Image 1 (cartoon, rainbow over the protein chains, first blue to last red):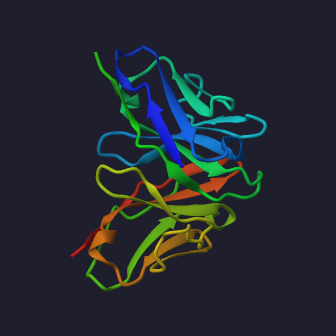
Image 2: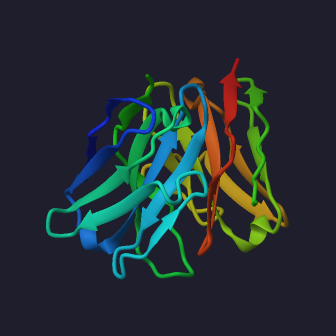
Length: 122
Length: 106
């Protein structure tokens, strides 16, 4: 069971970046997928989620309108398209799964990737 | 906006019980999870649905929720438990992490 993020790097303010997360070792379509970030020396911050079945998308207020989450079940991958990047988007971005057990139950994010670092600086 | 609050730090002696709290309005109406994060590593789920342990998590980790407060308890704390701990609140419209608590075992 593994999640592997990629796509991080150094980008100028106002720029764009696309993160990818490749899943393996489990039935991808049974899981909702999430992006969680951690700024240097700071705590965890939920960024976005996408459900497994309907593909419903959710965003934190801090990224709504700038970031777009998507998934490709055939490629067992989830993506985060990040536009209009700002300095405060600088963080390690983690991909994490949670089991799709319906809208009224929750088993937590039980598998996390190693993270990919995004640095927004001029 | 909804917030959950944790103490920034907790200290415990080896073999003693560590208690980390997480407070938020109507927290008992949401599912609470706890994550452990050691330096340079990804978070690890240690408690879900308030009080359930994932496979592989030691029995010394337990959780509870009452009213507006969720509690992570580590019984017989070991040096290896020194880490940052984050609570997470979830319902259909909320995914929120607390600010984290640094647990020091000394």
